[in-house]
Image (cartoon, rainbow, N blue to C red; front, side, top):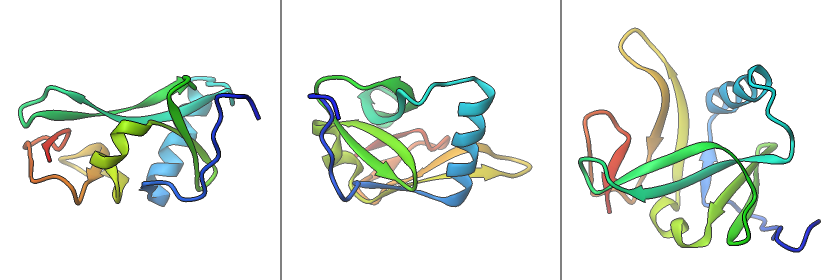
Length: 118
């Protein structure tokens, strides 16, 4: 384990079985190496104040590293307060296809489900 990796037993987020399958498919289809992890976070912006960050990335010095159902998850420590208890799912429907975020900390969300306020 490198100096910047910090093992933590319980992740602040969860991934559904559908999300795990979709992430594994993306990782395979795009030939993403095992040195990358799934970055989950927030950034300012979006119609409700914050928007979600979700994508494969390399580990950075200020990251907390989690193992969520076999997926290496990277998260800045300061983002955990906004994401604690959040569930990431994959939806495959006629009107909606993609990742969805069920965040119990969100006091308001936008219509597309990718931005929130807390």
